[in-house]
Image 1: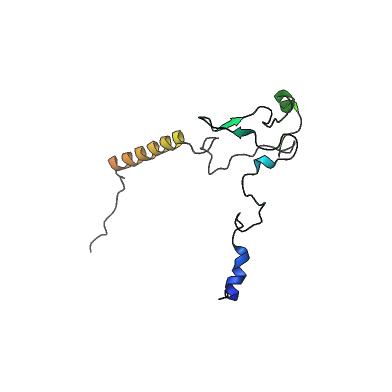
Image 2: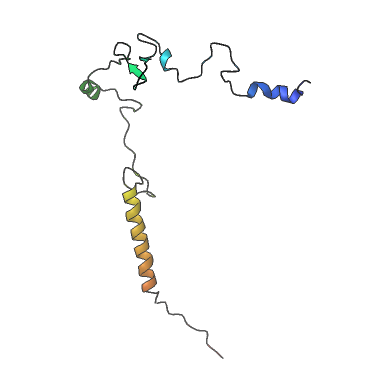
Length: 134
């Protein structure tokens, strides 16, 4: 029995998994295939309590300039040199710079409930006039 044409049309849309690909296909995190020196697994599997042993000769080493050189550099990532900081929006003027955190939320909730409590204790003193009867 052959599948219908609709089913054949949906076949290529399924995700590619290792059992649908060729024998060399591996869908892992591909860390062992980084380009450059010292590629491959950074250790070996061993018997015993630590099941994996890192080898210092195989661990990847990333070289960067000293941090002071980076901080003193006129180049900054993703920010133009002439960019000015934006003014806060009026709507979120009273929010802290870090955004909504637990301490700010708790403080705001306490203020809100205190205002509600005070409104219940002191009702509005509005004078309403009754319609004059003829």
